Amino acid sequence: MRAETVQKIFDTDLYAITGEEFSRGRGNLEVVRELIAAGIKVIQYREKEKKALYKYQECLKIRELTKAAGVTFIVNDDIDIAMLVKADGVHIGQEDLPIEKVRELVGAEMLIGLSTHSPEQAQAAMKRGADYIGVGPIYRTATKKDVCAPVGLEYLEYAAKNVSIPFVAIGGIKAHNIREVRQRGARCIALVTEILEAPDIRAKVKELRELLQ
Picture 1 (tube, rainbow, N blue to C red):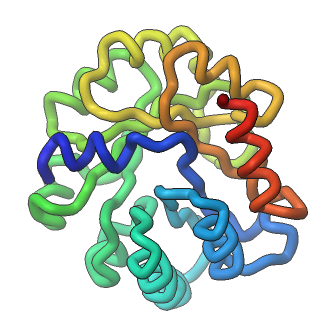
Picture 2: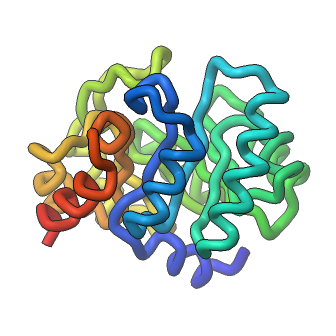
């Protein structure tokens, strides 16, 4: 995918990630519909515990919804599912398959995102062909079970000055600290529980956008 196309995709304020266990009893399809209605332009599907068939069937439906709405759809970890449903991208971690091998599988057109936790990992990701990176966790987070210690705002500031590909700030970001994250250089910001646990997703997205103004 051409660099300017990738830059355009991530020229957006909020990056939403699914997680049914945090969604107040709502299914992922309902949540995705609400996210789209709220004007979210990038949605990542992240479900660690579900069986592959369930994830595949859910992602097929989400791909339909996102495609119709012109929303970028990224699948976390499950490279096979991302390919089968023709997602726009796949997001992998430091301990997943090497990015070069993922590129061999998905081809030139699919986005590959890589989670990074240090300047060294960011530099390696750029050299090895990541289209974008996750920068975090900025703050302590309980959303992921195998998460590393917070990297803090220092790494975010480093990324803002030294990372030439798009990056998404992630990890423990809430309404009370989102301004600080923006002030330290994040353009695109990922939130999970802050959005998913809100009784009204559209109202929460509106509130977050007002805080970013």
